[in-house]
Amino acid sequence: MTKILFVCHGNICRSPAAEFVLKELVRRAGLEEEFEIGSAATSTEEIGNPVYPPMRRVLSDHGIDCTGKTARQIRRADYDNYDLLIGMDEENLWNMRRMFHGDAEGKLHNMLEYAGRPHDAVADPWYTRDFERTWDDVEEAAFSYEGLDLTLIQHTQSTVKGALALADIIDKVQNIQVDRDLLILACVLHDVSKLVEYCGYDENHVAYKSEEGKAYQHAFLGAAKAVEMGMPTKLVTIILSHTKQSNIDPHIIELMLLNCADKASAASAKF
Image 1 (cartoon, rainbow, N blue to C red):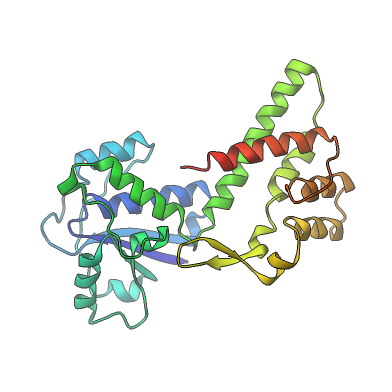
Image 2: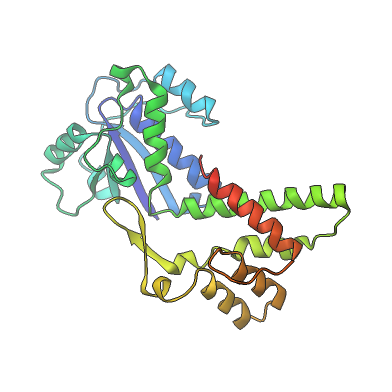
């Protein structure tokens, strides 16, 4: 289990927003059992108070419920209890280093480090009054957290839903029968190779390719695995030819629906 604690000055705006955004992403990915996520304050100013109403409203507008959350102060024991302690700005990190007498295990991080902006601060709405900007910063960083490959998970879920919706339209309007089992398998497996093709992020938080990713066309490894497992040739062809790198352009209705849903999902890959 990975334990993450978000930290800001008062624990009524930025850090609870980060806590509940990541909790929601984890819930949607079905990984609740693998993460423990909380938030705390460096100060005592708001201890016991709920999330600040304007921040709570913004979270609610985005479908996130933070009912029951009250501010608490960070404790020395938190350093041992959590794997990552993520501050919203450099002042939060300075206060944590002072409390923990440094950062011997490298657990302290800036929130926007996960968005490729390691020296920036999450906008503090207590001063800016711009709670949507805070939401944008938190969402960007939480969605980019590489400990949880949410981009791929969410993209796959979106592609499955989009392709099935298109299949319903094609069936109803043009009376074309679609093999939905084949379509679902193709949607689930079409990008699974990315788990091997990419192996990390650079300083700008751009994913970089592994040696396997450099050596093979995208989706080749997934297609090869499908062959090894005895999956239908038609499915293997769809997996291998969905990528723009492929020269294969078979007239398979399930492939056409996958391609449309895949491109639409990639274009709108936003929380």
